[in-house]
Length: 303
Length: 167
Image 1 (cartoon, chains in turn red, green):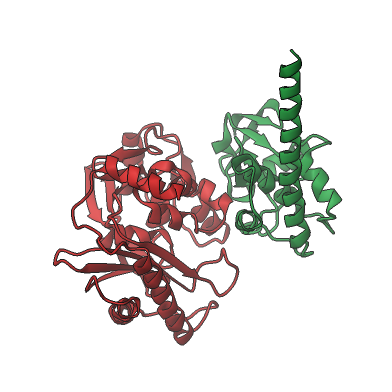
Image 2 (cartoon, chains in turn brown, red; image 1 turned 90 degrees about the vertical axis):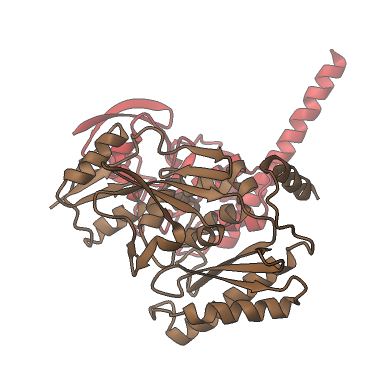
């Protein structure tokens, strides 16, 4: 039985369909849904195509960062100057998903709603403390990304809801890095990935924030304080000690538990070392106003 | 069936499509058989087309969503297309099945980044698979397009400057 395709022209109509249809599925970029349909493992009664809903593909600056509508493509997140300026780690990570054709079509909302534990973008969204807007016919609510992934292939999205936007705070000053290790093709799902952001902590030292992909049944997050004058080796050791209890790999064609655990350690160590090295010694705690930040970044890029 | 307004290689037409019809099948039925199915899951690039200049895996694309969009397929490229010419000159194909996809990915990359390096070429083509394994020749072909366009550009500028001076 094929699912009925609906093409609503406004958000209200889309949310009504999600509320009323028997077993609806949002059809965003369509890359994942279309593959699951072809494989015969998606049993939806109704597909709600949201490509025609105005406003969902908007990408805009906000006072504290940026807001990406659910239908913004992954490739736009990779290439748009706004994302590159305000959250360069995020732009970098979106640029590592699958291949350019998938990124041209896949959407930021569908990507996280897919809920796969191996996704790249959640690793950066976790360290940046993004917030997810979920909407239903009852209205919108907001869920921190760190509470969004609730179990294996499960998310905080409830029946009748859909992701409508992602709010991302401006990346704090400090170093950041993303490491993705694949066992098969470079653009295959990773066997291990880690996004690391080093920033000033409330207690005067530094905070190493770590987002892990493919290493547990969900994307996972942990942060660890490290003294600002610690060596890179000490920072790596602290990051590994913090991350290791969270590493709980699922064995599959890309490697067994021991192999992925080993790759996980390498990903955390490499990303931490790169982010630590990229952190200026006098990284301030104070948030720098956005306009000054942009200038700083542009100056740095020119070098 | 829903009629959609499809411009393929500059030719505009109205095509009736079903909700589940894939762009791949619609284009092939219109005669654009350079658009090919390989893996069927967006991982090999044989079905690549450009939609308003952006590469898309037509095997995962529902045609109904491409109403009003300009599609480019490899068979619609001009006979003296520089990317195609450099692929031929570099002998970048054996069986040729995957080549339309590689050619269109090359066009997308060089439109966005005319100075693409070997590493940038590799990164942009990482989702295209060639079973004959002519990857090195494909990379060479695209590097040659970069050099050729740079050369043509310089020649054009020099010509313009000379024209200005003599005016």
